[in-house]
Image 1 (cartoon, rainbow, N blue to C red):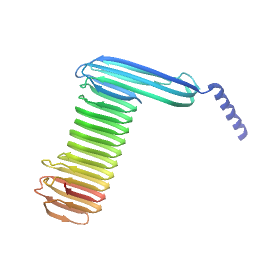
Image 2: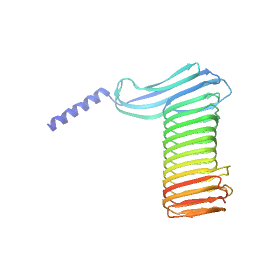
Image 3: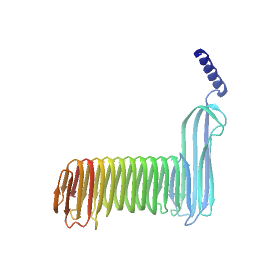
Image 4: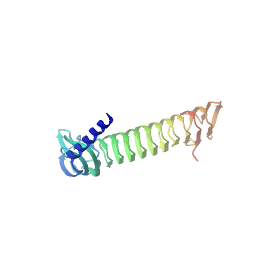
Length: 335
């Protein structure tokens, strides 16, 4: 029985080789270019697959889209060769662009992509509302004034000089970098680092599974939830700061505000909070294991036990709550 099965496998392999012939190389070069007249209130929706997207503003009331696709593929099989196309659609309130990589009715026993370049280069007036959805590919947007929504699997997102009502980025794997943003901000991802600077947000919500979060210079309420990763906040001017973590350190540097409401909770990791010496608040720190240091210039009503440290700094006009299972906690005034 074993010898007979082996013969069948050999015959099947011989049939595949005969049917497929030698490995074939396919080169795909496609270019698409369309322009659309637009006005205030219009939106641009792009499904860009694995392509990189670059969007820049200009002073024309026109959306100009150029898509370039180049791929070199080696395959062993039979059927139609893969291809690529772009569908453009214009409606009363927007433009829709969808890129397709096609492989119709083809059987491949082996395929290798030797090279692929896949880009969307878009110029548009900055008031346009942007909706992007992609698989793999990087996104760059600068100088934008319309709302931005991004839904991306794997790829980096870079935003600069954005002033709008709302920016929302959902991602799986990739890094997020924002340099200069005004407006509500929502970031939610699985794996990747987040780096923010120069943000003025009435409300900023950040949720991350694995990765580090670095924020330098943020004004407005901020809420962060991260499982595994470090949180570093510097030059934060916010009356409400809420931080949640599992594993990782938290370094929080706060500028003076009228009334501070800080809530920090983590399982494992050290926490350091640095405040202005004139920032007054009641504080309560609870922990299972770890040391607590409070280095503030004007503390009254101080109490300490094995799992609890409490007191009042100055007139106690604000509130600081810190909870940790394992980790050291430091609350001190800025040098």
